[in-house]
Length: 251
Image 1 (cartoon, helix red, strand yellow):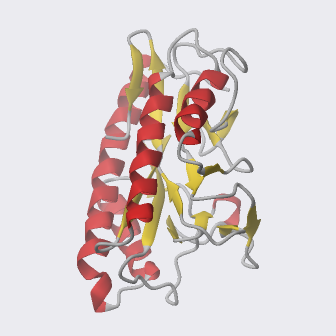
Image 2 (cartoon, rainbow, N blue to C red):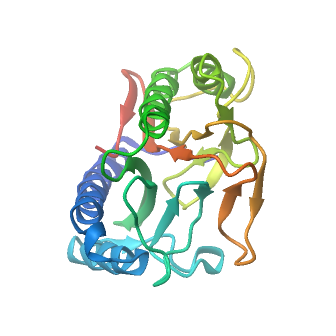
């Protein structure tokens, strides 16, 4: 666990604003061009280009040997989907884009999910409710609260829908590195875990399936997939714990 100064949080907010803008452009690129046959590798190439133009570098590329600048996960893929020329987008797909950036030697992390075209009601609802759960978790990132308060808020909200919360993968600290302590599970009990203090910066990221919580990893060693084949949504923001409450840095 590391604590960030006010100056560092200001830089993280600047970098997070850049990251949010780029991710919005990437989503728009997919939504407007998927019917033309673009592939995930096209999206990854655009991500790297936009990051470099903004004075940032992709923090995922090369991290533990990950081969790309962006994670592209589709339908039953939970996280860490490798963008390849064979990964294409189709009408109705539930797409998750996860991106990290290094800007002025500090790191931010962000993910969005969206459905291409009309899609199914259940896919669109899963996307919306996962985002709602993220925002409820963020609201608990207050000085004096515990890590478990964040996870409880997320889990408690999602329970009413019968969704599965992926437990093998969690949020995490971020800022001085791509991944830092503490882990930030998307489940938990109130008042448990590490106490939240001023200067902590957390990547909060619910990964939620329509049904079960069990996952497997593909032969590529990266792509995590829901074992039951159900849709998965993934939302993430980088959040600073401040005296005035939680501050979303990636918007």
